[in-house]
Image (cartoon, rainbow, N blue to C red; front, side, top):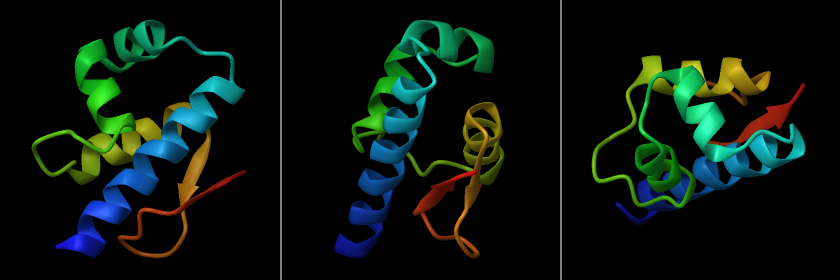
Length: 79
């Protein structure tokens, strides 16, 4: 469970880092992805209370031009 929480936090931190590097505001990105700004903030801060489903993960990664590093890993690489 600790590993899962750590992976979720790392995933969120990388999403936030990439969003900021792309000069994208949280509200704009959330609007483009059709999710609430609070949901995106929770994901970025590793405190979203539900598992992040594969479709949402892929949507976030694709929007930011990122890819998963391996299968089902939360670490990501900037491409």
